[in-house]
Image (cartoon, rainbow, N blue to C red; front, side):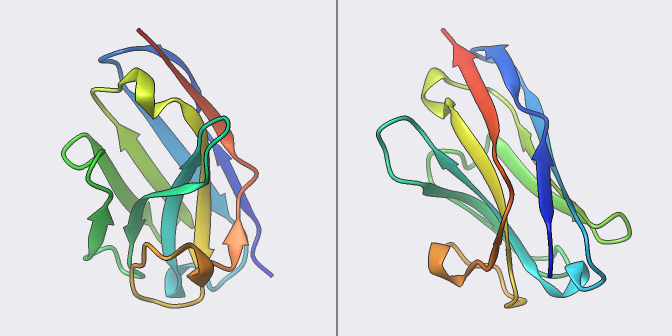
Length: 124
């Protein structure tokens, strides 16, 4: 069983930056693709970014491309989401997720493990 603990959210002004981190338990972290999703009030949970098992393939939703960067440190069993040039529309609860598939995927149903979520609020 894999447990994910995500952290790093907070309140930031538009144009600012935050770095989310997701720490995973279990020895198989390096075999998994990882992703970040977000859910705003009254909306469906949506894909943000994904990274494959060794970090050499990433994919982003169009609205964050060029502003967000996903990365991973397999030695630390941690995945990160660096968020720059934040906008009020980025406000949401952010969730990290792990997929037993090794390849990066934006498909929510392919993720097997989820963190508890961390709130990101961007003020205008």
